[in-house]
Image 1 (cartoon, rainbow, N blue to C red):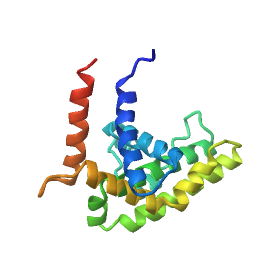
Image 2: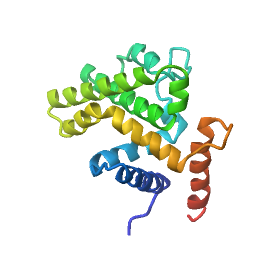
Image 3: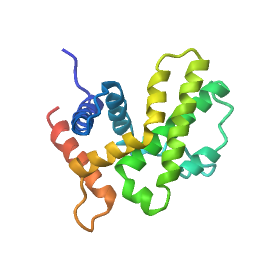
Length: 189
C-alpha cells in the first residue's frame, strides 16, 4: 500500500475542492482540474509561492517583477527551458493569485494584467513544449484560451471553501483552512 505523504494528502484535499467547484460550474475537464489542484498544492508552501528572488534576495511578488528578472545563466538549463520554467511559473502564479486572492489583485488594479499575462505565459509554454517535442502542450493551450474562466472558477472555490470572515484579511480564510486541514490530517501520521 502506498504511503500518503503530507503533500499527497494536501493534493487530495485541493483535488476534492477543485473537482467539486469545477463540477458545480460545469467544468468537466479532469486534466485541467488536476493541474489546478497541483498549482494550489505547490503554492500552499510560501517558499514555492515566492520562488523568484531579486538580486538582494528579496522575494518577487508581482508578475511584472518576475518577468523583469534576468535568468541565472549559470544553471544547467538551456535558454528555452529557462524561459519555459519562468513562463510556467508566471502562469501558475497569475492563476493562483487572480483566483484565490482575486480581491487583493483586483484591489491593487492588477486583475486584467494578471489575466492577460497568465494567458500569454501559458500560451508561451505550449509553444515551447511544441518546439521541444514535449507532450502536454495541449493542456497549456487550454489553460491559456480559458485562463479567465479558470481564474474565475478558482475565485468561486475560494468563496465556497476558503471564505474570510467579515473584515478579515483575504489571505486569512485560505490560510486558516489549509492550516486547519494540516493540523487534522498530519496528526494522523
